[in-house]
Length: 224
Image (cartoon, rainbow, N blue to C red):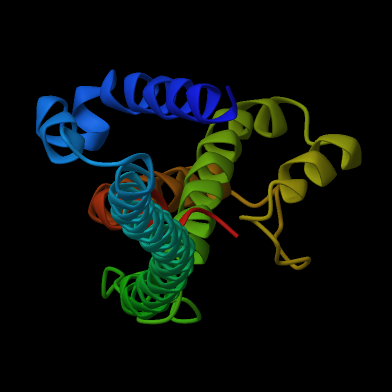
């Protein structure tokens, strides 16, 4: 009875192991144990099972190795991404520095150009500004022209009514400044009319020469 149950157990094991064809080789394993005693069958099955387990162990080892390789590759990719990000940041910082240097160089070149442009003036007029300051030259000439026109326009008023108030107002324009001018002397108005007319014409000529130089400077350098 005991031997019968042993054989049943062996047959059960055989069926169980023979069913997964891929694992134990299917009918090949069954053929190995046909005609064998129970002990021999168990021995054969044990050897086959050991072989399968060995192969499973190899597969598991390969899988673990592959997982380790994958993890290593993932880590290396992460490191490369970090390094790439650092390089991009470094490149961005370098570009910012280069841009800053280019801006500084442009500013410096602009200052040099402005130092040259401001000295370009007409060669006539107020010597204080010639070849020194086109902005000062332009403003002075423009003011002088305006005051000369005001003085010329106000001459008839002073001639008709030479009060001290009118005389002071005429002098306030800054063109007729000599305190010894005798506004009651014969012909004084004709004298100043001729001189002021000549001065106005001269200032207009100087201003027309100064205008493009002034515009060129202020367009690039502004007005300080």
